Amino acid sequence: QVQLVESGGGLVQPGGSLRLSCAASGFTLDYYAIGWFRQAPGKEREGVSCISSSDASTNYADSVKGRFTISRDNSKNTVYLLMNSLKPEDTAVYYCASGPCHSGGPIEGFMYDYWGQGTQVTVSS
Image 1: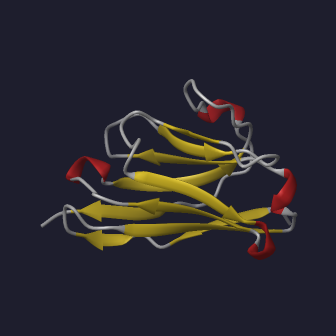
Image 2: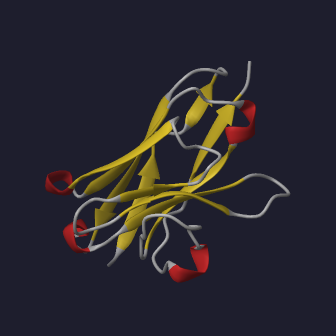
């Protein structure tokens, strides 16, 4: 059974850091690009970042560029999202999903197929 499971969310103060994990089971992550998305209450889903399968090239939304770093460890079948300098507006449920990743341009959720269940990130003092 193909499954993606996110973890690492929680409550953090503004300026703090979190590292989210997206662990895959039922398939080998090596051949798949992975994206991270988030959705805050009352807001549309936003593509945050993605990483390709081939050369691990990456793409970031302007809202997180310079603060978030996506990476992958194929030996652990896991993709990570390191989030630094967190702001209250980063509060959302974060999801990972498998789909295409192109450098530059928006990260579109409709192009992604398998999705995890999400992990809550709350940035608040």
